[in-house]
Structures are given as C-alpha cells and as structure tokens.
Length: 288
Image (cartoon, rainbow, N blue to C red; front, side):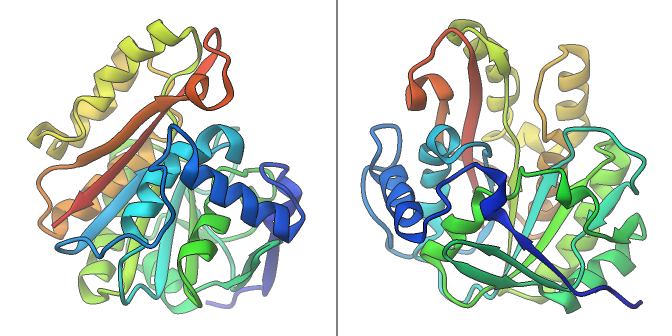
C-alpha cells in the first residue's frame, strides 16, 4: 500500500513551550513536581518486561506531572526501538474506525521521531479497520504531549501513532490483537495508551466517579474489557480514551500480563490548583 510522506510538528498544539530549552525545562519540572516522582530519570531497569503503560494527556503543566510517573518507570528500559502510541478521537468525524499516521516523521522542539512504517503497515494489514492518513491527526492533539517525554528518556526510537475514531469493544479487541501479535514478535516495541478520566467536575465528585474505572485496572477484573466498556456507558463516565484502554489491555493479555500497577492517581487540581473543575488522570503500568 502506498503512503504519502508526512511530517507533523507538535509545537503547534500549544500544549507545551515551543522553545527547545523551555520545553526541556518543562519536562524536567514535570519529573520534579510534588505530584510527580520528584526525581529525574533514568530509573533502575524494571524487573521484568513492561507490557504497556496508560498515561494521561493534555497541557504539559496539567497532565505532565502524572504522566511523568509512567515515563520515570520506563526510563530504565533497554532495547526499546519503537513506541506504538494509542489515543482517542475527541471530535467525531467521518474518518475510518482507526487511523494510523502515514510514513514520515513527528517532531517537537526537541527533535524528530521517524514513523516506523513497517510496523504501522503490519498493524493496518492485520486489523483491517482503517487507513494511513494524517487527516485526524491535524485536528487531534491527544498524542502530542507524549512526544517530548519520549524524546527526553529515549534516543533514536521510532513511532507508530494511532487514533481510534471507533472505541467499541469490537474495534478495541481487533486492534489490540493485531498490535499484540506484533509486540510478541518484536520485544523492542512498547505500547502506550493515553486516556483521561473524569472531565469538568469538582474534585470530590471526580474521585468517586474515577474510582469506578480506576479500581478495575490493578485487579484481575481488568481482563474483561466488556466490564470497562459497560461501566463507562452505564455510569456515563467521561473517560475519553476507553477504547485505547481496552486495546492496551487486549495487548497485555496476549503477553501474559494479569494485573496492572497504579503508579499514581491525580487530577488537574493537584497540578494546576483549581479543585472546582478538574480532569482525572491515572498513570498505570502493566508489567510481566
């Protein structure tokens, strides 16, 4: 399948400083924030293989300190050559169920990341759910904040950016199985899913509602992705990336992971100070 050479510059997303030195300082501040690990990477290498991580997205000043828990944890990993980055589409469109970024590169003020064209094409061919297109990525910035973190802790790794327009159980399962097959064969690939939890509620209410999903992740119950989907739908939870969460869980199941480890739960209240209108965040790692 032919693809168009594309280049995306995340500096235009306004989620972090456009000046390289200021951006590097912002990433460092995320690792040292009181809601973060409060120490700089690299960490000692985790015991065992990391099957995947779940981290939040948004402005670096809001979501960054919570996401930093995941990035500190994986900063000691050796042999990572490609990151498969899964995110949701916030504004529904007529796009395909799944969009994978075309051949080319993504950049931030810290530099460029080459798209892993071979892995991207293999995922697309195996799941048969979508297309190689930059269209959705032009209007969706949920993946952008993760690029500077990855560039800060790793060197010369490639990227496969994926957006899920359809977050149904069926699509999440099919995509997760396709990615899982690749990751089983390629131990240098790491899967990162991004989702936020409650949006736009007072702090106490957000804690209660987030617990409905948050409490499932470190328990064997997470093996049933239908439970996550039904909880989101029945309780009308404003979890924006439940599809990427379910796809990630499908991946880690295939690798033999049976529980998740919650590194940190927090909200934008802790990171930017407004407890009257918060977004909920979780940093969760799945390790073999």
